Length: 181
Image (cartoon, rainbow, N blue to C red; front, side, top):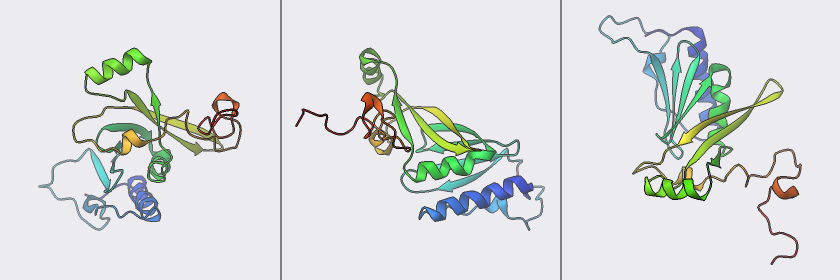
């Protein structure tokens, strides 16, 4: 199935990002620019670029430019094409974070409903001199890897620009406080 130039460029950009991060994506036969249309092939709504490993990432490139980045088979980030490769790069580089949802009551309910970490996955990327944040709910299911649960939370992450983080501490609130051992 020949692809439009934008989708073909997105496949190349995703391969570049993955290989730069030491990961080899699975082959994408649908992206072969020399393959003719096969009348027996079903019409596909998207082309998938699969980056195996931890975290596993599957990117569904849609012709309309509204792509889906599936992380660890349980988090679906809706991302416009302009930021798809940058979001995947941030996830593979370890810059994704969890934002815990709710208070103690929602955590207890989450445990009762077999989702012990009610949280959202946040990926913040630079885009045109500004930052864009993409967020999706983390829904833990049996068999989901520990990668998502081991991510630091948004409040734990030290700021990239060195400004004081939560509680006014430059380490983002993760180091020992003055006066405590």
